[in-house]
Image (cartoon, rainbow over all chains, first blue to last red; front, side):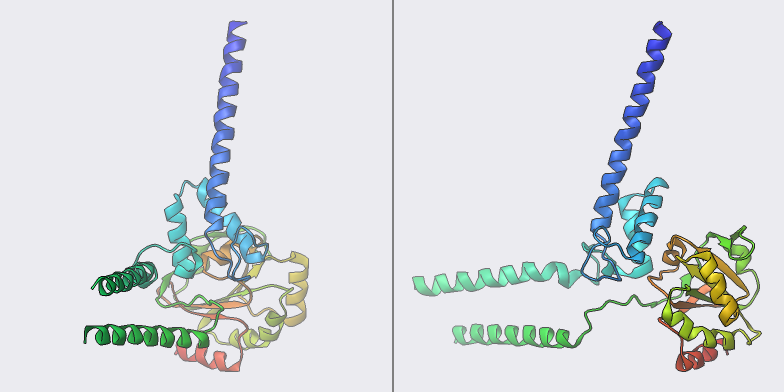
Amino acid sequence: MKIIKLFLIIFILINFSQSKSDVKSEELKNKILKNIRCLICQGQSVYDSESDFALSIKLIVEKKINDGLSEKQIYEFLREKYGEWILYDPELSKNTYILWLLPLLLFLFGGAIVYMNLIIKKK
Amino acid sequence: MKNKIFLFIIILFFIFCFIIFYKGLNNSNIYIPKLNNKKDLPIFIARDFYLETEVNSEKIFLDNNFYILNIWASWCVPCRKEHPILMELSRNKSIKLIGLNYRDNLNNAKKFIDELGNPYSQILIDEEGTLAVEFGAYGVPETFIIDKNKKIIKKFIGPLNQKLLKEIKLFLK
């Protein structure tokens, strides 16, 4: 009886950890798919799209996750195939410096205008 | 004086922004992935169209030849249009044409080949479209030129035409 109980506990634990990892990989898959642009219906993410291209990418991402590739490695694979544009959230690189730094520069520039105006008004 | 310089910088900044946005208006909103550098041939296992056995990519691209990989499907209207060009290319003995049948019904694909002729030395099945992704393709038809060093040196998105055929022949020289 004790042995049966022990087997039952092990069985439940294995199933629980399995379903937990399934949920995790499903979450990761959805996160990645939401960050990939569909090249057929441009403006939509692969997650939202049902085009042939999007369906193939969904399968590829799932396969890569099952093969043990990390999120970064999957993005790298897709970037190598289709270029930086395929990612909604491109990494900081020499091609994306302006993209990342321009908002900051505009913010500093605007701040400088406000600051200068305040100084002029005080005088 | 300081205020004038400041005003001048602001005007200059807005002119700069205007030029950038104005130039951007002329750019196409549609992104087309380009092949800027030579790319390594992906390693894959695919199913043969006729034999329905699995074949390794290393065996497909074994010869010291130029290869042309063409992605096609029977449901793709532009593929039908470019087929005579492929038939013409297949007469060139210095190249081997490989077909990649993309997300297709096998019976329809066989009918398509029976009707229009088979320009390919081998046809592979890409039922899920995942092999096309390995090549960096996103639709049909797409054509890739692979050199003798097994590098992808050029890709053509869309149907081939007489102008592109001349370009391909130049590559092969």
